[in-house]
Length: 301
Image 1 (tube, helix red, strand yellow):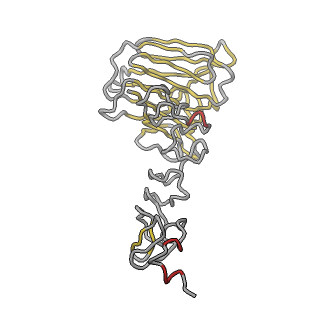
Image 2: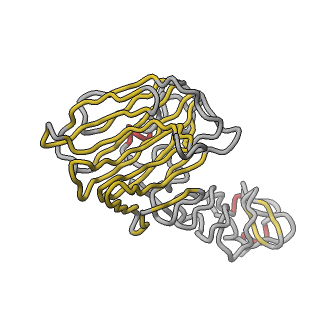
Image 3: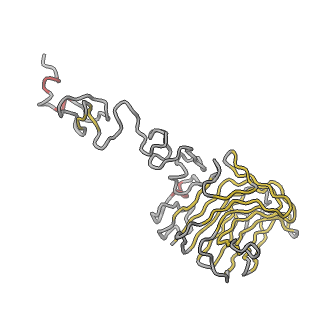
């Protein structure tokens, strides 16, 4: 009986084209359809890993088959929303639902995180899920543990986390947001996200903040937008502030808008100050304790 291997040069069909990389050995140049012979093994075109080893395209120590972001190195495998897409690759890291990850304008930012979901050009500049000490940030009064930043500020002494914008990265607009929970507070407590802060003159800092805190007039609280030059606008907020709240400060040129999931409507202010060349953005806590699940900056053209 003539074996198939004897007729290999004439009947390539003896091999199944469904063989995977490295599964079949070869001699000369004969391999199943779709594979090529290299170093005695039939290889998938473009395969670079040696046979007998596993592929790790981003060299982060996590094999591709287990890596939740196989093309960008993320050895911590951080996944804030638990959708099995690593934060570094996720189009909307804090929200795992399909509608949030949908990218209507194709700019890489999911609609749930995109301040302009129908206009391309947005980019997630910072997403921090607090699985480790935030890279490139200044941290005071906060501890990082278990995927949260926990802060405590006694009296008027503040606790904060801030990022300095790198020179040359200024954009037409941006949205700064964080998910925070006040764990203890008094009538003078507040937690805020801030944008376009200029601390170059410590005696007269310039800053725009979106704050939440208790109100003497309400059992729940108040949402405020505070600009060091333009003034303050506020709206009553509910339900109680000890529930988790997303606080958002969005800027378009000099128009600042503040929103929170506890608020019925946004408040806004037009700042009259000149915006700094290399501003600082981040979050601050005053006379309270709070935990922060995540912090994000999205920049737009």
